[in-house]
Length: 179
Length: 352
Image 1 (cartoon, chains in turn brown, cyan):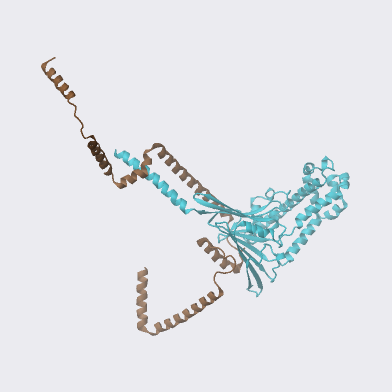
Image 2 (image 1 turned 180 degrees about the vertical axis):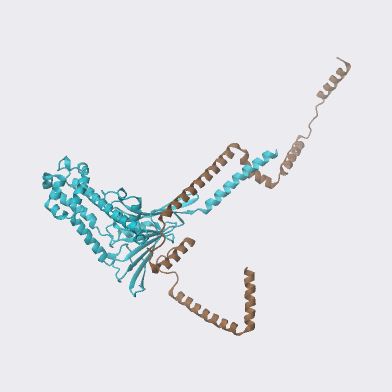
């Protein structure tokens, strides 16, 4: 053993015998914890949401299950739509070009009702009408009055060139705004 | 059995039917997605005669009734009565059928509504079912081919159009064929019914040669006899000549009463009163299947004639679907969610 080796061994022995003494362990622990929390809070909120929402994509069995469900939904959708289309096509042979089974005087009324039903899911009132006869009379009277007033108005406009021009200008402006 | 008696009864019945002042009737069922049905009966007559006993479809004072008059081009007057009612469900319609006092009260009719949730769509099925008159007859499809069946079940107006159209000769020949075949069908069905009723009446008293199975073996022979004696059937049956040829002299003498009873039962099926009408159904959503006819208003139409439910129940059915918007949205969001998750994972993996 050389002198250098002896010195090295002595230094090692001295270092081993003089271990650092941790006097304030609580403060050190707190500091470490704070630092860790700070690291954590550096992750942005959107990232956190993303992690929360799409964390499943990193779990094998969940990911595979989700893919399987989507495939089943797509197949089910395709199958249902194909089946419906096929059935609708099969109906073409049952179409007739006229509707003579519908009574002539009822046709317009029924057509309106069918259209109303298809658009709004309309139902026939359960007996009686929801509008009373008095209300209908009032409506007719109002309509008549309105028509008379409009007649007067048109007469006034027709006989006053300035007013006519003004109305025409305003109407043109109004039409332009609509377009 | 299609005897002269039966034929004369049929002619008499048809004369009564055409001479009676029953209205031309159309029933419209507007089916709603909740199973309720708005029902409207339209009756049209050249006389202001709408007696309950003449009407094809029942209605009462709880319906909203409206009377109108239509003056034709030739100044002829047509009286129109309409009756409307909102039914909460098909059960209420069936109740009204049970209390029917009209012309078709002897016929069992019922309405059926089925609603099925199928995730992307909700499917609806509505049908009006008329029970068969005869339990031992043969189905008409055993006698008519598809083209003939189409014509047989078509509304009169559609058939008239064909008969007056460019292929009128073809359709006239088709009508003759259908008539001949339906005569065979009626005859064979009546024989079959007679065999059933007769064998039931003689059960336990007759020998083995009069069981239903043994009589069935000779069914075609009986049909030939029916055709052979078509014109003199009534008198020959009364004299027992036909029965002797059918089941032998000894049996004919011994079981004449039972044979007559059986033929009386069979005759009853032919004379059962029924007045034709039309049924219209309007379904919620898009129609995806039906055995009716679809007119230009997307309304489904069926003629109702007694021949249609002579040996088989007559079901006028329609199926439709409405899309479930919320399921489309939920499914769409889910699919996008999964695809996004997979895409994010793929991109991150690529970055690392």
